[in-house]
Length: 169
Ligand SMILES: [Zn+2]
Picture 1 (cartoon, rainbow, N blue to C red):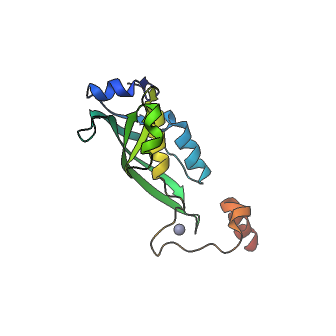
Picture 2 (cartoon, protein in one colour):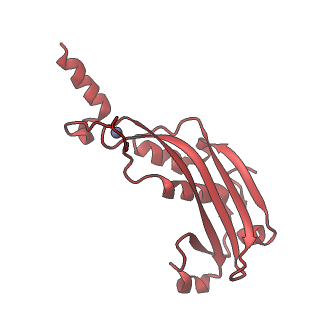
């Protein structure tokens, strides 16, 4: 199945279907944008995902278990060095009639409730999960991380290299 495929989530859940695939990161443009905006490199790697449909035993509601796995290189916000980040997370999407959405919001931490009459694009579900799992402020957690002195926001890593080069002359 292509990452851009869309499914009827209720049908998918009730028939217990499973999609277990890996697609190149370029199939997920919102992830590429977010990683680049964080000063990182989305790389050439893929995003692995498994979407598993089921009907929940506790409330008979159709649900999808969405699991994602990927690796990116982000920029450390303290030293601007490369920071490999591994994303591995999962969430349950539960489908309910629009009218009852308001009553059950925030009921469960690990589940999101969505209206049951809309189609679901696989890539959008995967993108959402990856974006939620990226660190808000990526920083190294070891001694190799040395803070950059100065206003890194305005000059950035290329500016720093230029200043270094000028100092040596
Ligand atoms: Zn660092």
